[in-house]
Length: 53
Image (cartoon, rainbow, N blue to C red; front, top):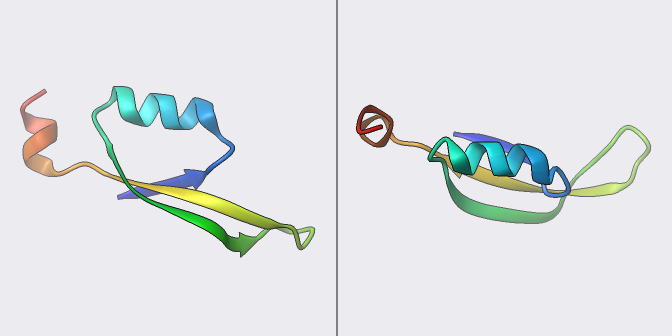
């Protein structure tokens, strides 16, 4: 499992190319160092799915 900032489209592209599946989008789920609300996207890749690649 991993997550990244929802605005980080480059990371999302890489994770999806590697076979990770998007499992959740968490809107306004955390605050950055400046106090701004940020959203995240969560991914998972099962061992069996990786071994098939």
